[in-house]
Image (tube, rainbow, N blue to C red; front, side, top):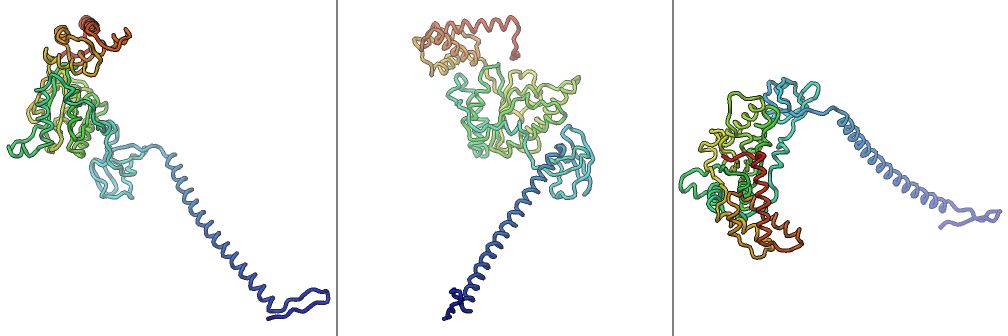
Length: 406
């Protein structure tokens, strides 16, 4: 051990051994502090690199947002590794240059691509996407309507179930017999007789994907757009199979083709021809069934009605006496009623549709609410019939806005 020497001023002078220990301790402290500073520097450098990457991404996003919008088109043909034929969204066809960074394997006819707004050159390949109107046509939740809610159409319901449900649920029955299942049914009848209601019941009953589309939605302004939507509609149905397509008001695109027609009529006819090709073309539909509805079967094109496209044409007529009584019974089941004579109501509603019978029940309930009562009486029903009869007579006098069923 070292010794200490007392100085003349009275302080103690450390010996060399003690000085060495002090220096060694200071050195260790400096080394530890240096290591901490190195660690801190490395952390700061890592943070700086991360921030620089973030800045680069933000600058790239800003540049993208400053760029003019790209035009969506479809690749028609690839001429070579530098040129291609594309169709823009407005239907015009161009020969354009290709981005050399694109994968040649992805450049196939029919591929959706993004085009530069100025040069129309192909900038990037887009993934295939359904038209929003087509993808939105798929029903996610099942309707609350069941076959029990449809009265007076027992025979028609059975025909629809045989043609639509049975091939999807028990296809082996058709294989044993050796026949091809029906592709679809066409429901015809006056407005308000239950055509759409029957389609909703089918959607509720089956586990198949249900896609509903109104015919007028397929009639588009630009050339080729209607046909493209029809192709996408059936392509979506095939991808989601087993599936059922419901085309309401099909007469909007299925009217007879005439020689003297306008450009708009010719575009509707192109849409019809695409529909005919999808219904009975080279590509089999397999587990895709079609239900169509119209109240104007007289104006439908003959090619649409021939066997092989709609194998069954089911007429939904105006309800007869027994059917009207059943329909009234269905609508009155959930209502609070008192001493009703349905037979009298049936006699007064000859020629009424199912929708009009439902309107009578609603109007009778409104009469009861207006009088401060909680139950519907026979007088309320008679009053409702009188009110609806006035509306029917006014419609007949001033001209019906609805098309006549012929």
